[in-house]
Image (cartoon, rainbow, N blue to C red):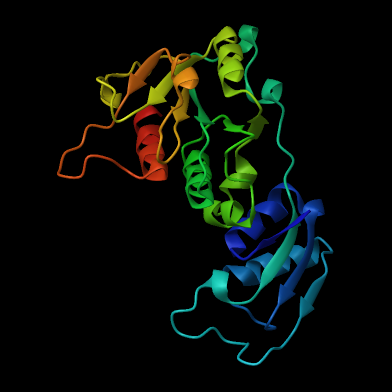
Length: 242
């Protein structure tokens, strides 16, 4: 299945990591401008087909029109997920520190894409995602991630509880994020390799998942609003823990 990517930074990342999976770029102008110019040059050097269709109103972008709404699109094959074994370290090679993520039934692809972008920025080792009741790795995720979905390995698991048990057997510690926790993230021991669990946007971390958490933490509010969007909270926690 091909994804239709409209963010040139996502396309550039795909061209860098797996150019053989970029099937075609369709433009509405010979000079789309911005980062698309670089993407087209990379695609040309890789021998990827580029087509130009001059539609009415094409050409130079209008004021307020972003690169993602310019009409240029790349057809890119979905990235294959890694296995759980590829994501996790072996017991013999577990690092003294490091951070992995586990997304417990996140359903908004905008959130998932933003988390991948932050994960790439902060050097996250890998992401575990639930197969059911979760946002698919669709075009929105890839575009919002701005290349992060290409850089961070991820595994799609059918049983997150069992996967966290395996992670703990490998020597990782599991940290759940919850606004109802008593410990602030600033009190978490940075000298351990953690799997940080981010819960569903409305319901948070599921009970069986929380039972696998060695610790729970929260981001203590400083103002009147008492909670954060899931992807914003994930970014703050990644910053704190790395």
